[in-house]
Image (cartoon, rainbow, N blue to C red):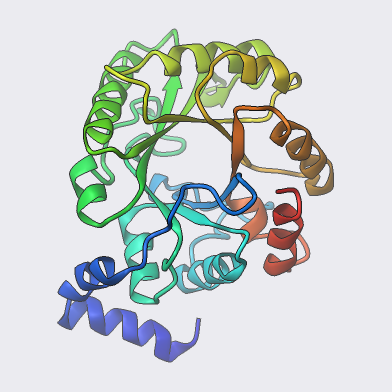
Length: 290
């Protein structure tokens, strides 16, 4: 990011913090959560707030905020990238940069389960509230909902996720729920990415809240995506995560997108930090799937 652009953001935050709300009020909203293809492609950038800064073998890849914002702007300039998912600080920077006009915007709601922490499975709601998401004119909220049968802190995560779903639904906003069956291995939280594990997480997440009318599910790629998609009638978006073979992953995404309730992709680090450094090319290759 050019030095003068970073200075503009710093001055706005210091001297005129109301400019953020003004930019939100003036923003042109997306007409639909999906693009012309009938599918959505949302770029994800809520990892830093959970202390998850690494990708592609670099543990501090996402530590430079100006660099991250540059990469996000490159992705959002592609008309096939019709949305972004982030925490308030990142979304506010993008608002000030004028990068969110016509885009679908999801606010990340719970980032309290810090990566590697002893309390990681306790995914407290430390991010955007349903009130804040509505006030900023955003389209929905996203939750990380990890389910560890051996950790009783999971119960409070399920309860607060259900409350978030209700709060968003009351405002007519999408609740994008990212569920995993999780467990500790060698002190580290790992997610069950077997077909059976993902199907079970989908079944549990689908039943959260007083209504599922506004609930979408954000699910990982599993060996048998037909079984995953068949586990619920809710709209599903496929998440990216840490990808080692992007070409193979694109083929898998393409097959998943053919399923009737798979409505799009939500991908972050692997496209923002591709091995060849070509963010525009990586984004364009995914847009072509839609």
